[in-house]
Image (tube, rainbow, N blue to C red):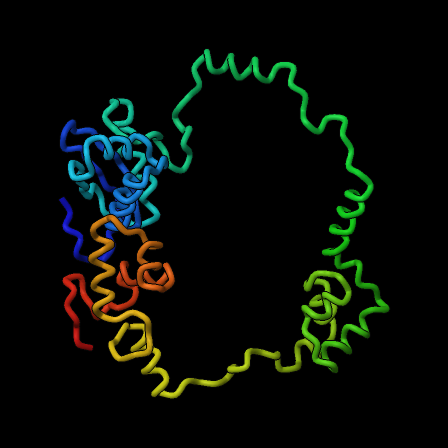
Length: 288
């Protein structure tokens, strides 16, 4: 059985029922997080993996264990999962409901009885929109929507005023587009025809060309690394508690976010060691 005390493992995994030997094959970019999610979903009665979750509730989650089959790169996950399932799928020993996760019906075919039933259902059926026509107001709305994004709506007489608003009055492209009831692209096309568009210094962000001082850079770096003593919601003790609680499988990202009053993205980053890297997998503080 895997001991999850390191960085996320990307690959193919196998969840085995220790009582009857049946198993489930899956793939994940983070096998540790997926295993915790499976256990949590089974307890909550999720129907995403019906055979697996029903068995986990029937035999008890403690009678299931997980193994790593293959460690591979993300782009090869679908390939290896399909190849491994292809060998076991027809032997009625897997909890998987489909052979290929990307295309659930690949390799499967309707029986003759099902084909006949589907054919009979379609016989004599009339399309819902046959003989129906759009109302006049709907047609007007469609035409208006087609014209809204049409650059031809900007006439030659409008161009001088558009150039004046942008270059002299310093209006934004979005404001000009809103005034003429068009998208931003036709306005941009008009501005690009003027030589000033290429010669003037583009109006950028308020901090364009400015750099942080060394003191500010150090503060930002320490906050990203999760160093103690910085202004942040999470502390070293809370980070250790979050990782320990998630390991139990009883708490989801949303549960922990509500419990510690922070965003789910922060919880996910803490669990995956994206932040607070100075607290290692053994919950020990590493001096920076």
